[in-house]
Image (cartoon, rainbow, N blue to C red; front, side, top):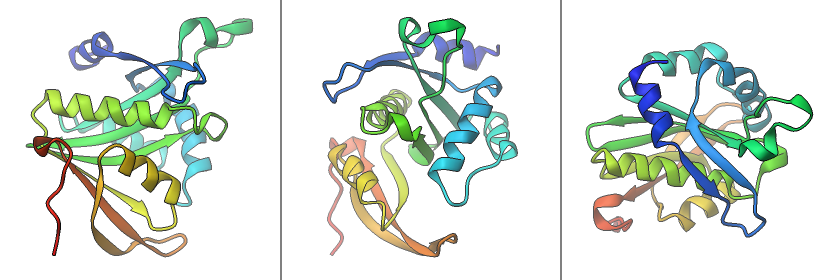
Amino acid sequence: MGDKDRRLKEEGIKRLDESGRGEEFKIIPMDESDLEEVLIIEASSFSSPWTKEMFLNEFLRAPISWCFVAKPQARQSRTAGHEEKVLGYICFWIIGDEMQIANVAVHPSWRRRGIGRGLLSHALNFGHSRGVRVIVLEVRFSNVGAQRLYRSMGFQAVGTRRGYYQLPPEDALVMARDLARGGSWPKIS
């Protein structure tokens, strides 16, 4: 385990989901042993999923690339000898004072339990502690549920990327949050 991973593991945040259902999970740095489960979530979440090589490339892009996974707390996850499972993950880049959310997904059977919100909160706090001012992401226009989550966390629509998605073809809504302004974003006239 490298110094970066050891430091991040120590910083790992334990979250209690905010939905009131009491699902406890922890957020820790993703490592290669998580990829089999991450790829299953990826394939079930996206029509053009990232490949194993793409995730491995993220591990090599240090210090700008960061990936974290959400896993159940130990007392919930190790029943009948099963190892901890990945509930969701997030990958993002930090370049200067800007963060780009590159990929975030939650296993279909664990959605709407606060895991996506916990992963995003972790990324925002992580970025803020490293001087990030602006966080940007793209989301399909048809993904109203994700847009609702992002808006609830202070993101605002700031633009459109025409033809961003290929399978099926669709524009992306660009959303951003300005941490330096407490989450507000200047209006585009």
